[in-house]
Length: 353
Ligand code: FA5
Image 1 (cartoon, rainbow, N blue to C red):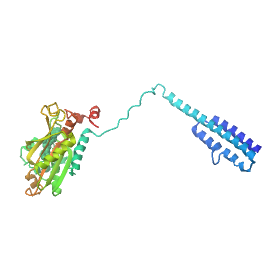
Image 2 (image 1 turned 45 degrees about the vertical axis):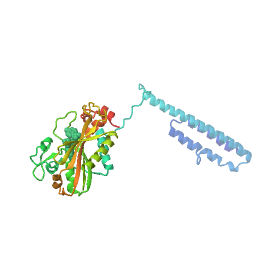
Image 3 (image 1 turned 120 degrees about the vertical axis):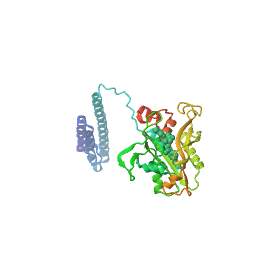
Image 4 (image 1 turned 45 degrees about the horizontal axis):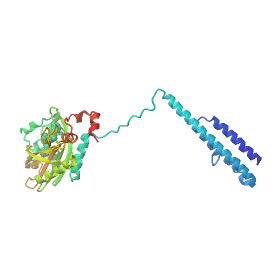
């Protein structure tokens, strides 16, 4: 028994000495396992002799072992605190001269560009109404961009779209390829490859050789819509555009149709949205008129159906082309389109969610 007690005392003395000399958290952990480890710790090994002792001896050894355990655990904890404090002091003195009480710099999270958000919003509205998504290339043939859309070769309407032609590249007819001036050629591509009934929405980037000002850009975005079936009427077009306007601008908005000319629709319509910024009273965004022009639309011209091999006596359809930048300007009350392209983050933060 006395040899066990001696072992215990020298274990305690040795452990206290080792803990006092430890200089890292890893070293401390090694000592904890060596002396107090449940399986192979030296204290556990001494206690393995307990069953062979008398009840009185068990009491004495048990009490002493318990005291040794508590005192070593306390020493380990105190040493751990001391090592951590030393590490922190080293970090602080390395940062001497810096003001550690300053707030951390805020983490700024990126967002989608406001034009992308508006485009998604418009497209999402039509997808929910049952339209399918369609796409076309930005470099187009003269046929798809003009001829099939009822612009004969010498038709003056071609001049209304100042076109960027792609040098040295020609389509199958020997005509120059061009950067599409609107998303309407997607109508042609889709009808050439699909049979009616169909309803599609086609977002995309378009290009016109135009001077840039507050309401015009030489590259901008449109969302094209097309629905073809038997007995489609202007009433269907009006209903769908009304739903679109209320979805994007809120339930109080009104739309009005004005006659307009586009070779590929008959009748052609320009659609205005009542100005929700001034509630129709007149402001700088609606140029004091109470209305803002948002899109072109109309009933598909029979010549367009003929160009894609549809029988105009059997089907009717409507089409529309929405100017995305105009929608974004109106939605955010911005009176200069160029702000959307300059990408000044102070502006983008103001208008995007
Ligand atoms: C067209 O581009 C026709 N393709 C739209 C259409 C489709 C009519 C289907 C009928 C049936 P327009 O050139 O008006 O039409 O342009 C449509 C919309 O694009 C305009 O209402 C306007 O919102 C926007 N837009 C036109 N030119 C510019 C420009 N330079 N910069 C920014 N937005 C423009």
